[in-house]
Image (cartoon, rainbow, N blue to C red; front, side):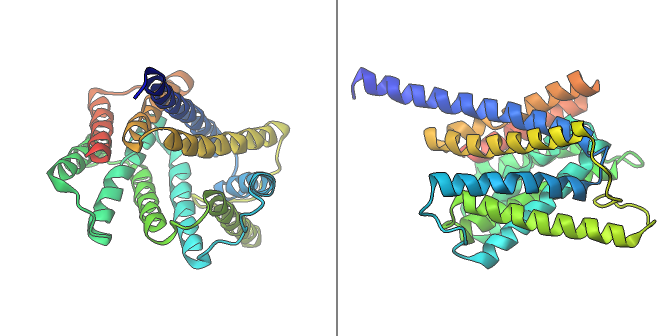
Length: 302
């Protein structure tokens, strides 16, 4: 191997790490902005409008860059089930943001690798090994430190990002077992179609309900101000950047390296929580975040 080949490989790894860190910076800032946005409009309205903006962008990219790729998935039923699980995961996580510190929601949500490991072990009989199970145990210890479930202290909303992580992990295992032949952009297309249908349906149901009390996910459709439209457009673009950036990072370097840097999201979530929302972390919470990040890295690199 020549020196130029070594340098080229190093450059690609460095590039992948830089892309992953920038992607997580973008996504964590987007979640901080969503924390503010969800407090001003029903979640169903936000999801509907965001997908209405994202869907044309995805179609344009597919037609322009990948005209040979059919817009219809290979297995529509499995692609739809995967998208429904992801949408439910998204709804739970977003619904928790106005009610939790951003750092807590992010840390509990980042138990995803632990649940993927569990589901892969029991569903597709993937070998986990002692190191993998050690990582799972450390991760759930971190969750306990974050949730502090002593009598009278457990915040029920803190279970929402945990439920979100479980649903997301199920969707990822489903992706591996039933949707491996699908184009990633087509899967994103199906996801946004389902989000439009369900988000629009929930909004219509809220209109027909009249004065009924709003739920965590639905509520009376509110008129949009200019700043909210601008935020929706910006968030749609940021989420698209996140999806593309993640794909580029994993294509440019070994997954074991890239996935380790994926946990930079937690650091950025803590940063935005402190800077934008004046959040304060106690010692138990900081240890919990560290344990969850360590566990995720152990599970991924086992």
